[in-house]
Length: 228
Length: 404
Image (cartoon, rainbow over all chains, first blue to last red; front, side, top):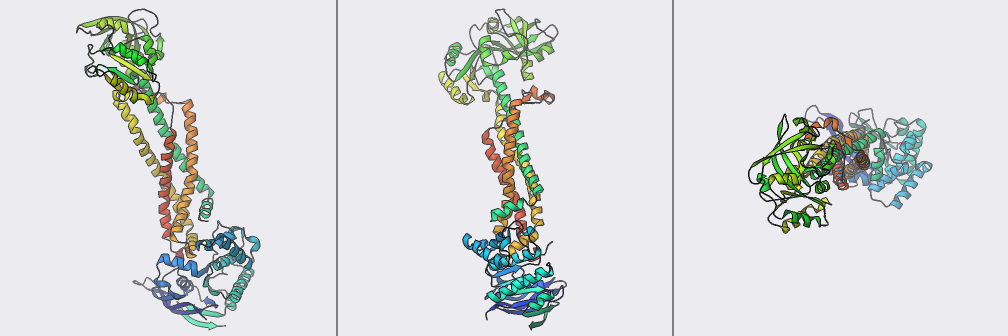
């Protein structure tokens, strides 16, 4: 299987010149295509920081993050934006949809940034929203959707750009149990049927139970890496 | 879709957007209305001066304006009047005798310009005949009638039928006096003019001056202001022994006011727009800071910096693009309304009247002023959008996404 993410000796240090605080300390993480991996650990263990660096939202102080053969720590801010657009799908804890756009427009938006044609955009947005069970809410704005529905739109949006993998930062944290269950099923299905690679940080035991690999971080260090 | 997002974003906080649009509209209205007010005031002042004092063009003996000596009359002045009367561009022509002298009542005396006029000709060239507030304008054949300004009448303690003595130097150099009876008191919009100008009949003064039919001044009133320079040039070509001056040359201070109007207009608008810019910057900055998480998310999912920048600037442009036409419409309606009704500033205009400014102002704004002012406003809005947009670009997605 092809390597999707290769984080090598990655460290994120705050206040490196005064009182250094290691948010992520010398982490090595290797993710293969099609994995469904949960990054777990207590609050402040560095899960989100590590995800940010893998997602190209932040630069590590040390180490490399190689995605599809490209060391993204060497890319400029502008190149990183373009790299994220073409390679990484994001699902955020607080949904983070564009509030003024409908569900369909939110999904289309990423494809628009990729300069996909209008017809192709519309077709794929419809397919993806149908896949996440929102075919009947295409023209609803985020404020008209429940938390679970918004997060499903976020998943559809993350898939829209045909990324190499999807990073999800505590995707079920703001959802009720039924919505969380539903979302997990969708993610698991996408992983299984489309071989989409997922890496998500979570506290949620239901998510951890669904994951096929669980990486545990404590104080910025990987303390266990278990396949289940 | 960027347009769609920017457009919808401005309606997320309707009240704030309406406030900023109103600021743009009211800012424009205030600026343009003050400009239209000033322009209306200047234009009326110019017309007043043309119609009561100067006419469009004046012709003199080349030496007359410097010394105002009685002997400096216009050669073949009456022929010139006849020629000019037949010019299709000319509305009316009047020949005048002008002499400086003293006017005295039983109690007081004052220095004045004595205007010897031909009542019928003068009636067509200037509005002095319609400025009479007491008595009547040179009707009949009575000799030695005089028309004086209201302010001068007060100074001299003169009333209708009062006798006043004019003293001046005649053409042969002798000091001559004539007794005149007040038959009319006039009031123009320029009290300084009223205080220093008296009118007598041409024949009466010519007899005392010993100038016969000779003229000191020919006043030419045109049908169209735009013909000013062409007609002046044509008159200069007619006779090189005269000095032909337009009202702009006769009253350079008035011309300066008119010319500097454009500069004032732009300076004034620039000041208003600066105030407006700070308002827009403040609003847009708030809008950006409130949406840090959203902007961070947009950059996280791959929206490039130029696009984020464009989105913020577009929002500013949309806000302004609604405000500008609204401001223009309000300005147009306000200016048109007050142009018809006029604004009575008599309560504040005693000082202004002294300098010939009217007491009722009719604001006026030529249509071609609207475009540069709109462009200035749009430019200002564009500039105002830049700082908030730059601030948006400085956001770090990893940090912004977690902002509440």
